[in-house]
Length: 77
Image (cartoon, rainbow, N blue to C red; front, side, top):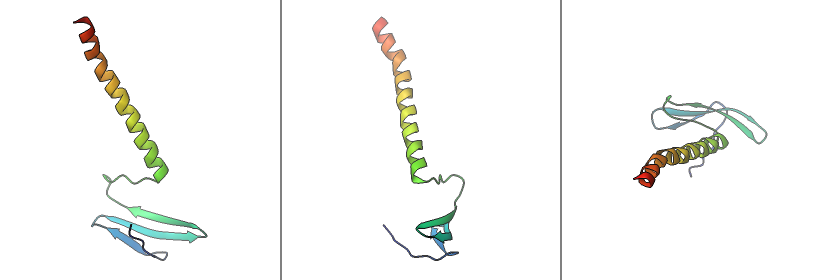
């Protein structure tokens, strides 16, 4: 992990298209702004985890739905 020290108004650049700007520091909280292309998904960790869990759930349901017709065909076949 790369650890950097920045002040309010300073930026961190990732590649050519992502910029992280320190906008405010208040106590133990840091507010940042992120500029990224629309195809780059940027989330807080807890939102990212919920999206991942939801995607896994949807994937499992799709697997069950897609498998059901094949299983039924074998049962009747």
